[in-house]
Image 1: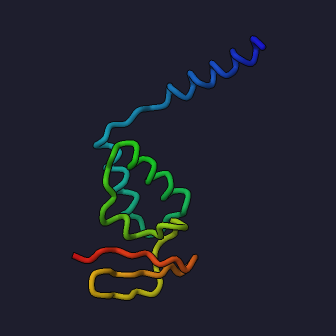
Image 2 (image 1 turned 90 degrees about the vertical axis):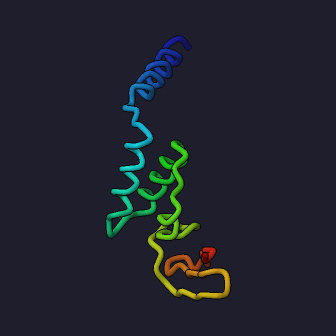
Image 3 (image 1 turned 30 degrees about the vertical axis):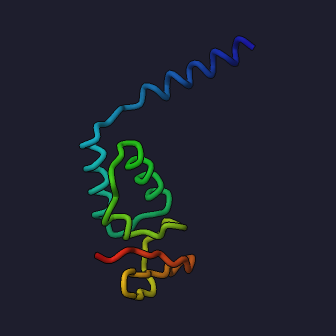
Length: 100
């Protein structure tokens, strides 16, 4: 029992030793990421968690990926009176964005 608690204590220490980044550095990482042409679902998920951790709004970047499957958004675009609807080409989910 003592050995197990020692192992878990070591892993907790290792997790705390990760490099902490500032809010400004996190914002720069998000800007660089969405500047890329291609990105995967896992990468988008990591960027979303980074933004949530530092309370950074994705605003316009949010419109670049599907809300459901997190792939790059490309598909049918429909424009109504108040909403722009983009149907995901991968999962067929309809992403709605309010138009100003």
